[in-house]
Image (cartoon, rainbow, N blue to C red):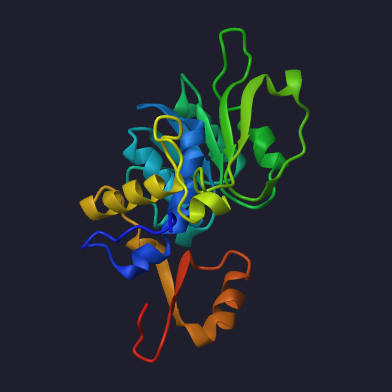
Length: 245
């Protein structure tokens, strides 16, 4: 019950079908609590990275996205600065984020992130005595090996794996609720504000739906997505002979 909200009149079923991913991205953003004007870095421009970049940009942040896949990079908003995951890209990022450095970072990819994390330290914000600071949120399934304490200064490493409070809480999902004064952004409210943003034109996601398959071809869709660096982002299925989405 609490995971369902009405679609605004000008928001279609295709957009509604990807709204769960929007919630996951928003929850990661809430953990980072970016401030207007801050330098934000998003690593990876898959579906998660695309939405995080859009939300951070809409929050007034200076957004950098590191992505080597041209198909994904081309779908980022114009206001976002794209850098490539190379030594030159890291140098450019350090120059463009000066003098404050990167203050919030989002890892939006899976697999081994150790090298990227070590490179990140050179561009993150530092205190006057050179101690690393800022927040690093892991919204994707990254694997990280690192030494804590002095090696990472005061960096805050945060894992984000939910769509908001209430997600996978069986009591909440069945209709139980949280006190509004204590739980401000539950999953239902996250969903509502995101769909309202889409309806008002403040958040564009339709261009991220790159493929559409009849449901009986679902296996082919998954095979396509499992290929390395597929030219795809969100994929939706059509149900029924009438092509109802």
